[in-house]
Image (cartoon, rainbow, N blue to C red):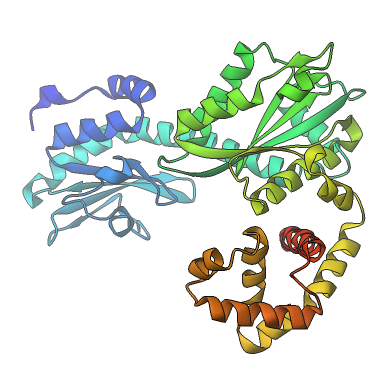
Length: 400
Protein backbone atom coordinates (compact mmCIF):
# COMPACT_ATOMS: atom_id res chain seq x y z
CA UNK A 1 0.00 0.00 0.00
CA UNK A 2 1.37 3.49 -0.81
CA UNK A 3 3.13 5.01 2.17
CA UNK A 4 1.97 8.56 1.30
CA UNK A 5 -1.64 7.63 2.05
CA UNK A 6 -0.86 7.17 5.73
CA UNK A 7 -1.28 9.84 8.38
CA UNK A 8 1.21 10.17 11.17
CA UNK A 9 -0.08 9.03 14.55
CA UNK A 10 -0.40 12.68 15.60
CA UNK A 11 -2.32 13.64 12.42
CA UNK A 12 -4.59 10.64 12.86
CA UNK A 13 -5.31 11.61 16.47
CA UNK A 14 -6.19 15.19 15.45
CA UNK A 15 -8.56 14.07 12.70
CA UNK A 16 -10.06 11.39 14.95
CA UNK A 17 -10.79 13.98 17.66
CA UNK A 18 -12.49 16.21 15.10
CA UNK A 19 -14.42 13.64 13.06
CA UNK A 20 -14.78 10.58 15.30
CA UNK A 21 -15.07 6.92 14.34
CA UNK A 22 -16.32 7.81 10.86
CA UNK A 23 -12.87 9.18 10.03
CA UNK A 24 -11.09 6.15 11.57
CA UNK A 25 -13.14 3.67 9.55
CA UNK A 26 -12.83 5.59 6.29
CA UNK A 27 -9.07 6.04 6.81
CA UNK A 28 -8.54 2.31 7.37
CA UNK A 29 -10.67 1.41 4.35
CA UNK A 30 -8.72 3.78 2.11
CA UNK A 31 -5.30 2.86 3.46
CA UNK A 32 -5.83 -0.89 3.63
CA UNK A 33 -8.13 -1.05 0.58
CA UNK A 34 -10.82 -3.16 2.20
CA UNK A 35 -14.02 -2.82 4.18
CA UNK A 36 -13.84 -2.04 7.91
CA UNK A 37 -15.92 -2.45 11.03
CA UNK A 38 -15.12 -0.74 14.33
CA UNK A 39 -16.89 -2.61 17.14
CA UNK A 40 -17.04 -1.36 20.73
CA UNK A 41 -16.58 -3.42 23.89
CA UNK A 42 -20.35 -3.94 24.25
CA UNK A 43 -20.47 -5.24 20.66
CA UNK A 44 -21.98 -1.92 19.53
CA UNK A 45 -21.17 -0.92 15.98
CA UNK A 46 -19.18 2.33 15.99
CA UNK A 47 -18.38 2.32 12.26
CA UNK A 48 -20.08 2.28 9.80
CA UNK A 49 -23.71 3.18 10.47
CA UNK A 50 -25.71 0.04 11.25
CA UNK A 51 -27.64 0.29 7.97
CA UNK A 52 -24.35 0.24 6.01
CA UNK A 53 -22.77 -2.73 7.82
CA UNK A 54 -22.84 -5.09 4.86
CA UNK A 55 -20.28 -6.69 2.62
CA UNK A 56 -17.31 -8.97 3.22
CA UNK A 57 -16.88 -7.93 6.85
CA UNK A 58 -20.20 -9.65 7.61
CA UNK A 59 -22.57 -9.24 10.53
CA UNK A 60 -20.97 -7.15 13.33
CA UNK A 61 -22.17 -9.50 16.05
CA UNK A 62 -20.65 -12.45 14.22
CA UNK A 63 -17.49 -10.56 13.28
CA UNK A 64 -16.70 -9.56 16.87
CA UNK A 65 -14.57 -12.14 18.63
CA UNK A 66 -15.78 -13.42 21.98
CA UNK A 67 -12.25 -13.44 23.45
CA UNK A 68 -9.09 -11.91 21.97
CA UNK A 69 -6.72 -14.41 23.58
CA UNK A 70 -3.06 -13.46 23.89
CA UNK A 71 -2.51 -12.23 20.32
CA UNK A 72 -3.30 -8.69 19.31
CA UNK A 73 -4.94 -9.88 16.10
CA UNK A 74 -6.44 -12.93 14.39
CA UNK A 75 -6.53 -13.77 10.71
CA UNK A 76 -9.12 -16.11 9.21
CA UNK A 77 -7.68 -17.36 5.92
CA UNK A 78 -10.98 -18.94 4.86
CA UNK A 79 -12.86 -15.63 4.92
CA UNK A 80 -9.80 -13.38 4.41
CA UNK A 81 -10.85 -11.52 7.54
CA UNK A 82 -8.45 -9.81 9.92
CA UNK A 83 -9.63 -8.96 13.44
CA UNK A 84 -7.45 -6.54 15.43
CA UNK A 85 -8.02 -6.13 19.18
CA UNK A 86 -7.71 -2.93 21.22
CA UNK A 87 -7.54 -3.63 24.98
CA UNK A 88 -9.64 -1.34 27.19
CA UNK A 89 -9.04 -2.46 30.76
CA UNK A 90 -10.84 -5.76 31.18
CA UNK A 91 -12.79 -5.23 27.95
CA UNK A 92 -11.68 -4.80 24.36
CA UNK A 93 -12.79 -3.23 21.10
CA UNK A 94 -12.31 -4.84 17.69
CA UNK A 95 -11.41 -3.62 14.21
CA UNK A 96 -12.48 -6.06 11.53
CA UNK A 97 -11.01 -5.72 8.02
CA UNK A 98 -11.96 -7.79 4.95
CA UNK A 99 -11.01 -8.96 2.46
CA UNK A 100 -7.33 -9.04 3.42
CA UNK A 101 -4.97 -11.27 1.45
CA UNK A 102 -2.73 -13.44 3.56
CA UNK A 103 0.34 -11.86 1.97
CA UNK A 104 -0.84 -8.41 3.12
CA UNK A 105 -1.58 -9.33 6.76
CA UNK A 106 1.75 -8.12 8.17
CA UNK A 107 1.56 -4.78 6.35
CA UNK A 108 -2.09 -4.28 7.37
CA UNK A 109 -1.27 -5.00 11.00
CA UNK A 110 1.51 -2.40 10.84
CA UNK A 111 -1.06 0.21 9.81
CA UNK A 112 -3.29 -0.83 12.70
CA UNK A 113 -0.36 -0.70 15.10
CA UNK A 114 0.31 2.90 14.05
CA UNK A 115 -3.23 4.03 14.84
CA UNK A 116 -3.87 1.83 17.87
CA UNK A 117 -2.64 4.41 20.41
CA UNK A 118 -4.90 7.29 19.25
CA UNK A 119 -7.79 4.84 18.77
CA UNK A 120 -7.32 3.52 22.31
CA UNK A 121 -7.36 7.07 23.69
CA UNK A 122 -10.45 7.99 21.66
CA UNK A 123 -12.29 4.81 22.63
CA UNK A 124 -11.50 5.39 26.31
CA UNK A 125 -12.89 8.94 26.07
CA UNK A 126 -15.97 7.68 24.23
CA UNK A 127 -16.63 4.98 26.83
CA UNK A 128 -16.15 7.49 29.64
CA UNK A 129 -18.76 9.82 28.12
CA UNK A 130 -21.15 6.90 27.59
CA UNK A 131 -20.74 5.82 31.21
CA UNK A 132 -21.41 9.39 32.32
CA UNK A 133 -24.60 9.49 30.25
CA UNK A 134 -25.76 6.12 31.58
CA UNK A 135 -24.96 7.15 35.15
CA UNK A 136 -26.89 10.38 34.70
CA UNK A 137 -29.92 8.53 33.37
CA UNK A 138 -29.74 5.82 36.03
CA UNK A 139 -29.35 8.35 38.84
CA UNK A 140 -32.22 10.45 37.52
CA UNK A 141 -34.60 7.55 37.04
CA UNK A 142 -33.82 5.56 40.16
CA UNK A 143 -32.27 7.68 42.90
CA UNK A 144 -33.27 11.31 42.48
CA UNK A 145 -35.94 11.34 45.13
CA UNK A 146 -34.59 8.92 47.66
CA UNK A 147 -34.80 10.44 51.15
CA UNK A 148 -37.18 13.18 50.02
CA UNK A 149 -35.38 15.49 47.61
CA UNK A 150 -31.92 15.01 49.13
CA UNK A 151 -30.89 12.77 46.23
CA UNK A 152 -31.91 15.53 43.83
CA UNK A 153 -29.92 18.13 45.77
CA UNK A 154 -26.83 15.91 45.74
CA UNK A 155 -27.24 15.17 42.06
CA UNK A 156 -27.55 18.85 41.13
CA UNK A 157 -24.47 19.61 43.23
CA UNK A 158 -22.43 17.11 41.17
CA UNK A 159 -23.51 19.00 38.03
CA UNK A 160 -22.67 22.32 39.72
CA UNK A 161 -26.27 23.50 39.33
CA UNK A 162 -27.81 25.88 41.83
CA UNK A 163 -31.36 25.51 43.11
CA UNK A 164 -33.18 27.42 45.85
CA UNK A 165 -34.13 24.67 48.29
CA UNK A 166 -36.48 27.09 50.07
CA UNK A 167 -38.51 27.62 46.86
CA UNK A 168 -41.37 25.74 45.22
CA UNK A 169 -41.22 23.90 41.91
CA UNK A 170 -43.14 21.58 39.63
CA UNK A 171 -41.90 18.76 37.44
CA UNK A 172 -42.64 17.79 33.87
CA UNK A 173 -41.68 14.46 32.31
CA UNK A 174 -41.16 14.21 28.56
CA UNK A 175 -41.41 10.61 27.49
CA UNK A 176 -40.14 9.36 24.16
CA UNK A 177 -42.54 7.34 22.01
CA UNK A 178 -42.12 5.68 18.63
CA UNK A 179 -40.69 7.23 15.50
CA UNK A 180 -38.89 6.67 12.23
CA UNK A 181 -35.44 7.70 13.46
CA UNK A 182 -33.08 6.39 16.12
CA UNK A 183 -33.31 8.53 19.23
CA UNK A 184 -29.98 10.29 19.80
CA UNK A 185 -30.02 11.04 23.53
CA UNK A 186 -26.82 13.09 23.61
CA UNK A 187 -27.60 15.43 20.70
CA UNK A 188 -31.21 15.83 21.78
CA UNK A 189 -30.07 16.70 25.30
CA UNK A 190 -27.94 19.50 23.87
CA UNK A 191 -30.80 20.72 21.69
CA UNK A 192 -33.06 20.87 24.74
CA UNK A 193 -30.51 22.92 26.67
CA UNK A 194 -30.00 25.22 23.70
CA UNK A 195 -33.75 25.79 23.52
CA UNK A 196 -33.85 26.59 27.23
CA UNK A 197 -31.10 29.16 26.74
CA UNK A 198 -32.91 30.73 23.80
CA UNK A 199 -36.05 31.06 25.90
CA UNK A 200 -34.07 32.72 28.70
CA UNK A 201 -35.09 29.87 30.97
CA UNK A 202 -31.71 29.32 32.60
CA UNK A 203 -33.35 28.56 35.95
CA UNK A 204 -35.18 25.54 34.47
CA UNK A 205 -33.25 22.35 35.18
CA UNK A 206 -33.26 19.49 32.65
CA UNK A 207 -32.22 15.95 33.50
CA UNK A 208 -31.99 13.08 31.03
CA UNK A 209 -33.61 9.78 31.95
CA UNK A 210 -33.87 6.51 30.04
CA UNK A 211 -37.23 7.31 28.50
CA UNK A 212 -36.74 11.03 27.93
CA UNK A 213 -36.33 14.09 30.14
CA UNK A 214 -37.32 15.53 33.49
CA UNK A 215 -37.66 19.31 33.71
CA UNK A 216 -37.85 21.15 37.03
CA UNK A 217 -39.65 24.49 36.74
CA UNK A 218 -39.81 27.17 39.44
CA UNK A 219 -43.45 27.60 40.48
CA UNK A 220 -43.70 31.08 38.93
CA UNK A 221 -43.51 29.54 35.44
CA UNK A 222 -46.55 28.94 33.28
CA UNK A 223 -46.17 26.28 30.60
CA UNK A 224 -49.54 26.41 28.80
CA UNK A 225 -52.16 28.92 27.68
CA UNK A 226 -54.21 28.48 30.84
CA UNK A 227 -51.25 29.43 33.01
CA UNK A 228 -50.30 32.32 30.75
CA UNK A 229 -53.53 34.10 31.69
CA UNK A 230 -52.31 34.44 35.25
CA UNK A 231 -50.35 37.61 36.08
CA UNK A 232 -46.67 37.88 37.04
CA UNK A 233 -45.62 34.52 35.63
CA UNK A 234 -42.77 33.62 33.33
CA UNK A 235 -44.16 31.78 30.31
CA UNK A 236 -42.46 28.75 28.74
CA UNK A 237 -44.25 27.43 25.65
CA UNK A 238 -44.19 23.71 26.35
CA UNK A 239 -46.44 22.86 23.39
CA UNK A 240 -44.08 24.63 20.97
CA UNK A 241 -41.09 22.95 22.62
CA UNK A 242 -42.76 19.56 22.16
CA UNK A 243 -43.52 20.27 18.49
CA UNK A 244 -39.91 21.32 17.78
CA UNK A 245 -38.56 18.35 19.74
CA UNK A 246 -40.76 15.89 17.84
CA UNK A 247 -39.88 17.31 14.43
CA UNK A 248 -36.16 17.49 15.26
CA UNK A 249 -35.99 13.81 16.16
CA UNK A 250 -38.72 12.40 13.94
CA UNK A 251 -40.34 10.88 17.04
CA UNK A 252 -43.42 11.27 19.23
CA UNK A 253 -43.32 12.57 22.78
CA UNK A 254 -45.86 12.89 25.53
CA UNK A 255 -45.51 15.21 28.51
CA UNK A 256 -46.91 14.86 32.02
CA UNK A 257 -47.06 17.85 34.36
CA UNK A 258 -47.15 17.56 38.16
CA UNK A 259 -48.37 20.21 40.58
CA UNK A 260 -46.15 22.70 42.39
CA UNK A 261 -44.60 21.74 45.76
CA UNK A 262 -41.87 22.98 48.11
CA UNK A 263 -38.49 21.55 47.20
CA UNK A 264 -38.43 18.80 49.88
CA UNK A 265 -41.74 17.43 48.49
CA UNK A 266 -40.79 17.45 44.82
CA UNK A 267 -41.01 13.67 44.70
CA UNK A 268 -44.80 14.10 44.83
CA UNK A 269 -44.72 16.31 41.73
CA UNK A 270 -42.63 13.68 39.93
CA UNK A 271 -45.14 10.97 40.85
CA UNK A 272 -48.02 13.13 39.62
CA UNK A 273 -46.26 13.86 36.32
CA UNK A 274 -45.68 10.14 35.83
CA UNK A 275 -49.29 9.29 36.64
CA UNK A 276 -50.55 12.00 34.30
CA UNK A 277 -48.45 10.45 31.53
CA UNK A 278 -49.56 6.88 32.20
CA UNK A 279 -53.22 7.74 32.66
CA UNK A 280 -53.07 9.92 29.56
CA UNK A 281 -51.75 6.91 27.67
CA UNK A 282 -54.58 4.75 29.01
CA UNK A 283 -57.04 7.43 27.91
CA UNK A 284 -55.64 7.46 24.39
CA UNK A 285 -53.54 10.64 24.74
CA UNK A 286 -50.10 9.10 24.29
CA UNK A 287 -48.84 12.01 22.16
CA UNK A 288 -50.29 14.84 24.22
CA UNK A 289 -49.46 17.17 27.12
CA UNK A 290 -51.33 16.01 30.23
CA UNK A 291 -51.55 18.06 33.40
CA UNK A 292 -52.21 16.11 36.61
CA UNK A 293 -54.47 18.87 37.90
CA UNK A 294 -56.71 18.40 34.84
CA UNK A 295 -57.32 14.69 35.37
CA UNK A 296 -60.59 15.46 37.16
CA UNK A 297 -62.01 12.61 39.21
CA UNK A 298 -58.88 10.54 38.51
CA UNK A 299 -56.69 13.16 40.22
CA UNK A 300 -58.95 13.17 43.28
CA UNK A 301 -58.88 9.39 43.49
CA UNK A 302 -55.13 9.20 42.93
CA UNK A 303 -54.61 11.59 45.85
CA UNK A 304 -55.94 8.84 48.15
CA UNK A 305 -54.13 5.73 49.40
CA UNK A 306 -52.88 4.00 46.24
CA UNK A 307 -52.68 0.57 47.82
CA UNK A 308 -56.27 0.77 49.09
CA UNK A 309 -57.43 2.02 45.70
CA UNK A 310 -55.58 -0.78 43.90
CA UNK A 311 -57.11 -3.40 46.22
CA UNK A 312 -60.60 -1.99 45.61
CA UNK A 313 -60.19 -2.06 41.82
CA UNK A 314 -58.75 -5.56 41.85
CA UNK A 315 -61.45 -6.87 44.17
CA UNK A 316 -64.18 -5.32 42.02
CA UNK A 317 -62.82 -6.90 38.85
CA UNK A 318 -61.78 -10.17 40.52
CA UNK A 319 -64.65 -12.31 39.14
CA UNK A 320 -63.70 -11.38 35.57
CA UNK A 321 -59.95 -11.78 36.21
CA UNK A 322 -60.47 -15.21 37.81
CA UNK A 323 -62.79 -16.42 35.04
CA UNK A 324 -60.26 -15.33 32.40
CA UNK A 325 -57.45 -17.16 34.23
CA UNK A 326 -59.52 -20.36 34.50
CA UNK A 327 -60.99 -20.43 30.98
CA UNK A 328 -58.61 -18.36 28.85
CA UNK A 329 -61.37 -16.12 27.47
CA UNK A 330 -59.98 -12.55 27.17
CA UNK A 331 -62.78 -10.86 29.08
CA UNK A 332 -60.71 -8.02 30.56
CA UNK A 333 -59.53 -6.77 27.18
CA UNK A 334 -63.07 -7.13 25.84
CA UNK A 335 -64.36 -4.96 28.68
CA UNK A 336 -61.58 -2.38 28.13
CA UNK A 337 -62.36 -2.02 24.45
CA UNK A 338 -66.10 -1.79 24.99
CA UNK A 339 -65.64 0.97 27.57
CA UNK A 340 -63.07 2.79 25.41
CA UNK A 341 -65.30 2.65 22.33
CA UNK A 342 -68.59 3.61 24.03
CA UNK A 343 -70.13 0.16 23.46
CA UNK A 344 -70.02 0.40 19.67
CA UNK A 345 -70.54 -3.32 19.10
CA UNK A 346 -69.55 -3.48 15.43
CA UNK A 347 -66.35 -1.46 15.94
CA UNK A 348 -65.19 -3.59 18.87
CA UNK A 349 -66.03 -6.89 17.16
CA UNK A 350 -63.80 -5.83 14.26
CA UNK A 351 -60.98 -4.88 16.62
CA UNK A 352 -61.21 -8.27 18.32
CA UNK A 353 -61.70 -10.19 15.05
CA UNK A 354 -64.80 -11.92 16.42
CA UNK A 355 -68.45 -12.05 15.37
CA UNK A 356 -70.69 -9.50 17.06
CA UNK A 357 -72.74 -12.36 18.58
CA UNK A 358 -69.56 -13.71 20.22
CA UNK A 359 -68.93 -10.24 21.58
CA UNK A 360 -72.47 -10.10 23.02
CA UNK A 361 -71.93 -13.49 24.64
CA UNK A 362 -68.74 -12.22 26.29
CA UNK A 363 -70.40 -9.05 27.55
CA UNK A 364 -73.32 -11.07 28.95
CA UNK A 365 -70.79 -13.19 30.85
CA UNK A 366 -68.99 -10.06 32.12
CA UNK A 367 -72.29 -8.51 33.24
CA UNK A 368 -73.18 -11.76 35.03
CA UNK A 369 -69.80 -12.02 36.77
CA UNK A 370 -69.86 -8.36 37.89
CA UNK A 371 -73.58 -8.41 38.65
CA UNK A 372 -73.95 -5.17 36.70
CA UNK A 373 -76.23 -3.81 33.97
CA UNK A 374 -74.03 -2.24 31.29
CA UNK A 375 -77.02 -0.73 29.52
CA UNK A 376 -76.95 1.95 32.24
CA UNK A 377 -74.64 4.90 31.55
CA UNK A 378 -73.70 5.29 35.23
CA UNK A 379 -72.48 1.68 35.34
CA UNK A 380 -70.35 2.20 32.25
CA UNK A 381 -68.84 5.38 33.69
CA UNK A 382 -68.08 3.65 36.98
CA UNK A 383 -66.31 0.71 35.36
CA UNK A 384 -64.46 2.99 32.94
CA UNK A 385 -62.81 4.64 35.95
CA UNK A 386 -62.23 1.34 37.77
CA UNK A 387 -60.57 -0.35 34.77
CA UNK A 388 -58.30 2.64 34.04
CA UNK A 389 -57.21 2.88 37.67
CA UNK A 390 -56.70 -0.88 37.85
CA UNK A 391 -54.41 -0.78 34.81
CA UNK A 392 -52.51 2.27 36.06
CA UNK A 393 -52.00 1.02 39.62
CA UNK A 394 -51.12 -2.52 38.52
CA UNK A 395 -48.42 -1.03 36.30
CA UNK A 396 -47.23 1.14 39.18
CA UNK A 397 -47.01 -1.89 41.48
CA UNK A 398 -45.08 -3.87 38.86
CA UNK A 399 -42.59 -1.00 38.48
CA UNK A 400 -42.11 -0.88 42.24
